[in-house]
Image (tube, rainbow, N blue to C red; front, side):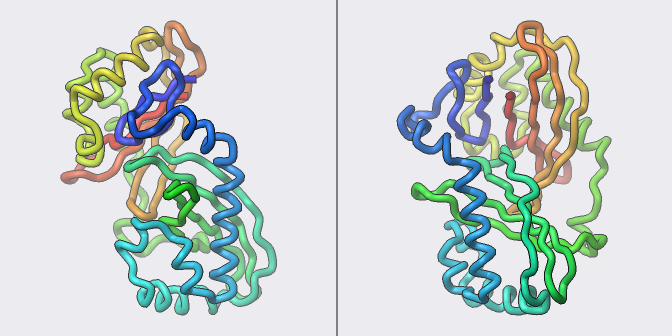
Length: 263
């Protein structure tokens, strides 16, 4: 497994470069319990919301969330959104996945829940690793109705895939500087062009040239920022069946890459 680190600043395999801010012991400590601990933190948070314990649920959020939402605002919105759903009947874990997005990636936990008065809801909880614990940085209740917010409207998937492939073309040509220049502001502010060039070369060059790259799937992350994800199944000259995950967001009217992960 290899992980190219862009704006993500995540622990990597020996094929990649470990950020100076993360020691190998810290990585080992955080790696094993990641998925299970994140799921428990997400469910604990939702249980607090179910009990209308707004202050305690707010205390379980991360700095990024609190910088955008005061306790009063969180309480006001929660009181308006959650009580009308009624008593929780069932809550089942649907997905628990890593979202490569700045500043350090997120765990996205989704539950399918059924309420006495609100029917079925998909609850999406985004968490970031902060101060040695998983902290909530975004939460969405989605009954599956069509979005009314223009910003949440369906995106042009052809445009999204084209933007991802155009950026990957720089990587394939080993033009690290061009890939850095073509990336989004969040990417560029997290790593310098020279540091990115060194990290990308060390992680990408051992794989050899691209033999085949096929679209695998699309994804999205709406909280705390609107991010789009394009995944490819890629056969490299020296590694077949790799998964490339490209994370993009709107920047200056067009999609720009803010994260890149190879697994």
